[in-house]
Amino acid sequence: MSRRAAAAGSQSSLREANKALVVSTVQRYGGLTQVELAAATGLSAATVSTIVRDLLAAGVVDTAVTTRSGRRAQMVTLARRVGLAVGIQIGHRHLRVVLGDFAHEVVAEQTLPLPHEHRSDTSLDRAALLVVDLLERIGSELDEVVGIGIGVPAPVDASTGMVSVPGVLRGWEGEHLAQVVGKRLGRPVHVDNDANLGALAEYTLGAARGYRDAVYVRASYGTGAGLVINGRVHRGFAGTAGEIGHVQVDPQGLICRCGSRGCLDTVVGAAALVEPLRASQGPLTLRDVIARARAGDPGTAQVVADAGATIGAVVAGLGMAVNPQCVVVGGELAETGEVLLQPMREAIRRRVLLNQIAPLEVVPAELGARAEVVGALVLALQSADVPARVDDTADLSVAAPPGDAGAGGTPDGERDEDRDQGQDEDERRAAVG
Ligand SMILES: [Zn+2]
Image 1 (cartoon, rainbow, N blue to C red):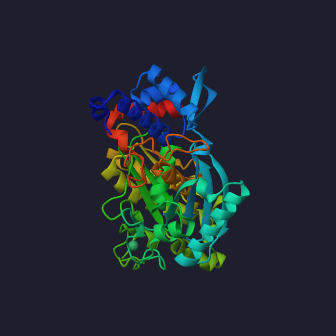
Image 2 (cartoon, rainbow, N blue to C red):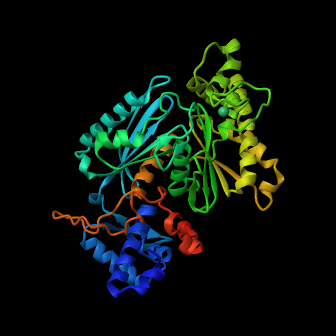
Image 3 (cartoon, rainbow, N blue to C red):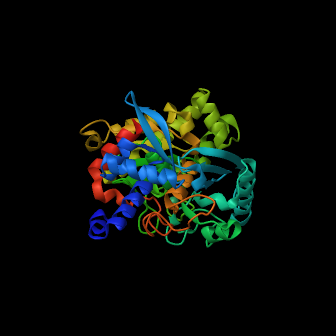
């Protein structure tokens, strides 16, 4: 609901709308001080203070004393009793599950290895069992879970929650992931591409915090990117936005699993990285390559550096299209640090226009290997309905109007962005400073 529409309504509906605005703002950032809440919502400090008191009495928020710029401040978070969410990341070789609360705090997590070319049915089964296991570990139950986010290494059609392009993730096509897990666990499920979720996490909590336009690059068994444009994750018409692993870098190159020739993934994917090392170092895995490059082995470091330069050139092209304020680099390959980042930075620096005002920042993901799974958690939290009251006789009516913070809305929960962009951006900086 826009604030203008609310003003036309009655006094009490205005109060409810303001309350919903405060709840959805806290939901989006994880936690804000009252001063920051006033700036982010455009409400007066007195109104925010009254609403926070009401929400505290209703059990919806918790407050705690914190400091901002050396002053005491009242930090507002959604209460733990409002619920937990689940983040699941399906990787090429592992499965990661986290449980977290509305303050974006991870309260339990577990990673399991997955076999090469694992299939959707068995992997989703293991994920579901792991969720129940983790809940048990912290003494919680499924009915406390407000939603589940799942990240997969393939383009996802947001409207169906299915892998939208065949060939990219074998054994996962035609599987209705949200439906399968939803049926199994009985909670709302939201599915997205892993690089998009990495972008969402780094934008909400990590290295891209405080920026409006950012590119997240995931360099792993394959390469992908997530785009944040004007504060929203940009997925594109069929969910393939940012699929830089399938940009052509070698017109005479190998045929990619997507069917095209000479894709970036055929040059810097796991198989391409281990191949030139076979003669001198024997058969290696991607993990071996990463470990040896980190330990300073010159041969493997050269392979990773060459990959960095090639990825950097493609990201520079993407950067020309998007004009981001920063490039955040995650995925397993980023564990080699400057071995990968320095040549990427070099390739991006060579594109004059990208660095016109200031050098385009290329920085490692702050959330490291957890960026994608934390992004899945954030997706679930931002998509959840927050109840207006939380107590023994829980009122099931919803504080945020349906479609505002509802499961059917835009999954990244950035709906009120248009309302007050400039102020919101100042606020983001204040919130994280
Ligand atoms: Zn391809």
